[in-house]
Image (cartoon, rainbow, N blue to C red; front, side):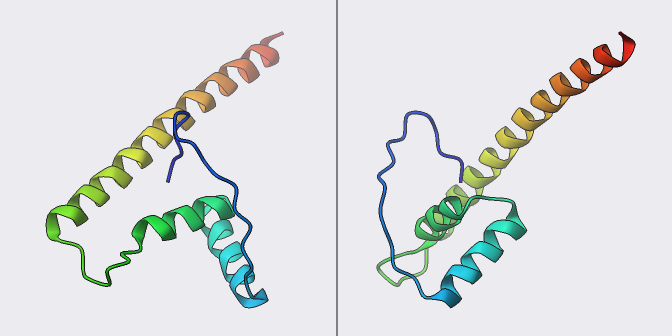
Length: 93
């Protein structure tokens, strides 16, 4: 989940078992995300009613996550291109 600049976040302190902390840290490391991002993503995917999401809701969620991934990838590619350009310029000098 990508947090936009306009989204207000609230700091919360949670108590977790050592097992849950290790699991959370492993997920974050494997997915190359922050622990906070993993928690937000888990909360986003949780349905408190206990009912399954409708197909349209699932498609909307998948679409949203795919758009986020594409935007993140495009942003990363731009930063990488800039960095490579700077490095190439330094090598020329």
